[in-house]
Length: 493
Image (cartoon, rainbow, N blue to C red; front, side, top):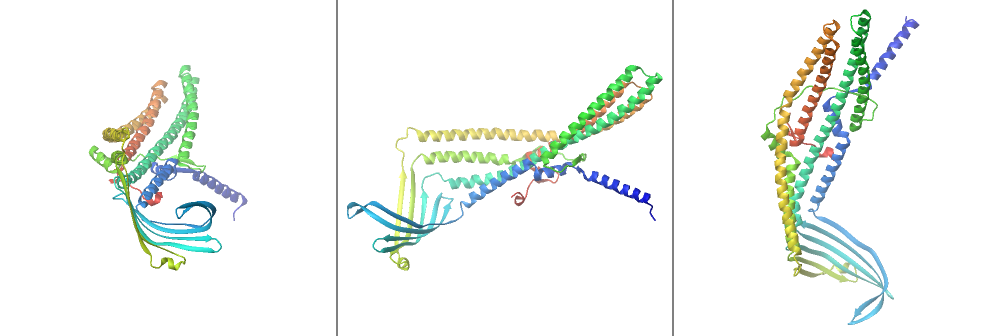
């Protein structure tokens, strides 16, 4: 049998366990990779990148649709007219009162021809007129079939150039999306290490405050025994006051960095985030030539070089074509018939043909055409020069980033070793101070070096990951899995 006292103890233990569990549930531990994944899914920069890619995707789909057959249906059902118009009858003009209703229905199938820049079309049309006089007179005009085409003979062929440029723009958009996602990863990593460093500084500040408080209390006892001077006691008191101030500042800074990270990740829950340092790194050495090759194969800038040159050539071609001799060819063959009855209008149709060639020849333009051509050619040379310089900068940026990344592994090992040595030195120095072998100055120096070494290690760790992610963004290549970066378009759309 349980006594009331034992039941109360069990209840209190249960409530305490629930409270501790609730506290633990309010703390979320995150690794660097988890932070990056959250940022890629829901950060403002990631969402903006997704919407930009969607816009580019539908722009490309619109371009592709322009080469597909288009089926249109248009009509007027009906048009009523009652007016006095000026008409010519038998060579004489007179004003006649007219009252009628007209209706029309036209279905057309057309397709643009990318090779020539023209258009071929097929259409069928039905028209009806009802004249309102003493009695209603109805007549029909049918065009069961019309086949024709429109063809600019010497004009700039926009379709031809779009077939070269638009696919490049779409590929460039896909690569830009990947680059934007890598930029999101870099930004998230910066926020990650900002908070990680703030949490470590807070931990250092708490340890330092506790150590200084302990040392000050020990020093008070020694001072009362007369084994240390008042100056040393005051120095320890000042160190304790500084440690208290640094602890408050570290707490405030940690809260600010936590808010920044949660804001970027769009985490709305009232949770505390504890970050796990990414101490495990990749044992990777990147070859410069390999990185440059992957960059030209994968990056958007490599495509933009080609696209800019094509656009400049297209503008020169447009300037030459649109400011000289132009001609348009229009030809159509079809069948039509008119009758007073609907079914008779489709019986025994007559054929019709139409051919038209229009032209435009500039006679005197005071050098307008020549000026436009020269401007387009000058812009083309400017683009060539700019692209050549961009290629040089492109290679140089990758070369420097590879060199910078390759030296990070060694720098990280040095920083880790320095952190370990500095902590051991501080512990030894502290013990020597407690037994009176050294003064407070040496202890303060050891503590400062310990804190600086820890912060230096985190800073070097940050540099390693930022440089790795920047190298991924510059080449769009995953050096861990040895393959280009890619994404599922369906997931983005």
